[in-house]
Every structure is written in structure tokens, then in C-alpha cells.
Length: 118
Image (cartoon, rainbow, N blue to C red; front, side, top):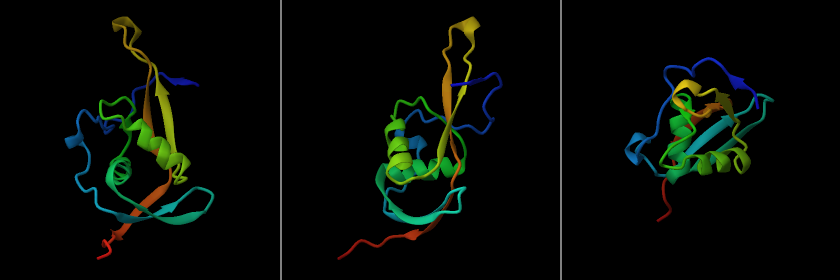
């Protein structure tokens, strides 16, 4: 693991509470395109939808009281979405430890909401 000595982008988002996440949890269809040219369509709902939409807005600090790392892991390993973690050096002078930031590497587009079966 190599540490970056710079700061993460200014637009990096912090998730301090559930209200910091996108509000919709209803199922939605997303088109995922990875760098190798592979594409897939997936339906995501609940916290998975909230986290992918959060990552679509920009980078996100890994540490969070809402425990987003579990969902990021599911999106990476079960859905094959390319989410990269970059690590940054903390401020040793004040005792701050190193930390990570999630970056969405796949191209993700929301296609539409999915209607529930009656």
C-alpha cells in the first residue's frame, strides 16, 4: 500500500449520518461499463443503490459511522463494479492516522427505476 502525501480532492464526500446518503432506496437499473469494455446491467436497491449513487457524485471517505465499507465490498465483489481505494497519509503532528478514499472507476449510468411486481 502506497500512501499519497497530497490531500484528496476537495469534493470528497463524508458520510456522517444516513441523511448524507442519496434518499431513494427503491430498485433502479444501472448500466455498468468497466475499463476492459465489459458492460452489464444490474438492479440495485436499498443501501446498494444509495452507495453507488453517492460514488457517482464523486469520491467518498472510507471511514464512516454509517459503515459504507461493507456495501462497497459487495458492489466490488458481487457486482464487479470497479471501485478503487486510494490511501492518504494522516497528519502525524496531530496524531491523525492514515485514511482511505473510494473512487468509482467504472462508468455507471442509472437507466430507470424498476417497478415492483403486483
